[in-house]
Length: 198
Image 1 (spheres, rainbow, N blue to C red):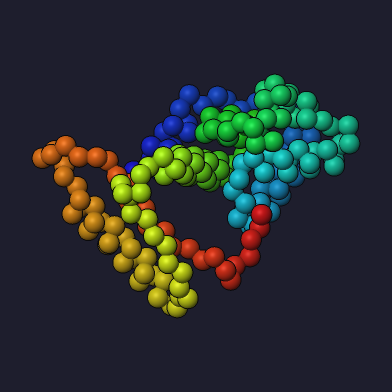
Image 2 (tube, helix red, strand yellow):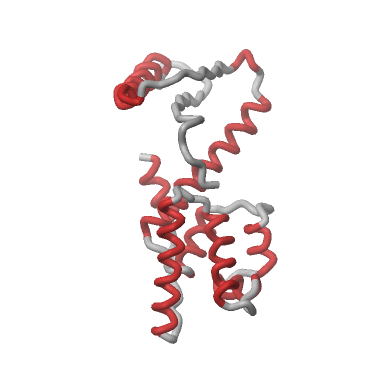
């Protein structure tokens, strides 16, 4: 349900991507861009801000006279706006991902990945700010670190899904009473034994 809502917002009033006049140059650029995307995807790098920075570096290495302003013109935005995006001083919104993605002719599946990661980061920032203000007596939050038998991960994930569903059904007052809205979040992920690609 959440992905469908995200997709609708992502493609809402989507502009038509511009095409370069020189077909040969356009095809060469597309091939190079696809190589960057393939490498990025293989390294599980779904951060759109870093992707833009890598794409700018790739273009300047190809053409030393290429600049931030030239990249901004290609994306049809002001150079100061692009600079703030790259420096982390401005949030990467779904609209920005859609607009830049179409200017760069990115495949739909990659746009979806970038959009989902951006949405997830936005929700995490919102949750972090909320937790900072919330009194401890109004929340229950705990963490446990354990060594896991990976052969049991599939069953563990199913148990988490069932627990979340059962707890939601137990707590959901529906229309019978007025209650506060709570978020239930259950996470399980490795903190060692994997390779980071940051």
